[in-house]
Amino acid sequence: MVIAIIAVLAALAVPAVTRALDSSKRAACVSNLSVLGKAFHLYTAEQGTFPQNTDAITQTNLQPQEWLFDLKPYLGGKS
Image (cartoon, rainbow, N blue to C red):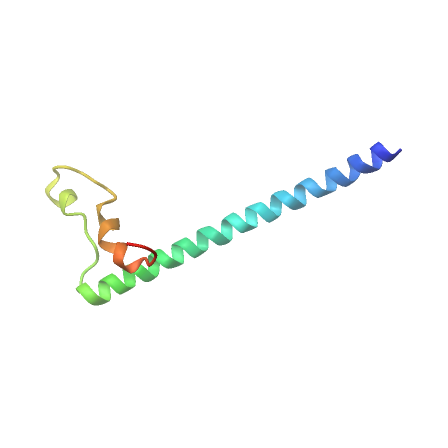
């Protein structure tokens, strides 16, 4: 009987824990997107242009993450 009660409680707890983990991941993602949006806004306000990948314009050495280096000073944290 005790084992059955423990099994029922575990069956009820697992979905709740899963929802809590999903919710925390979603909150972290929203926070990261907010920080990126603010970094883009600050960069654009100071530079007068949106960060661009210069290699993509010339179609030579494509580095899709190159714009991230331009935003690094605006992302906070250690340099």
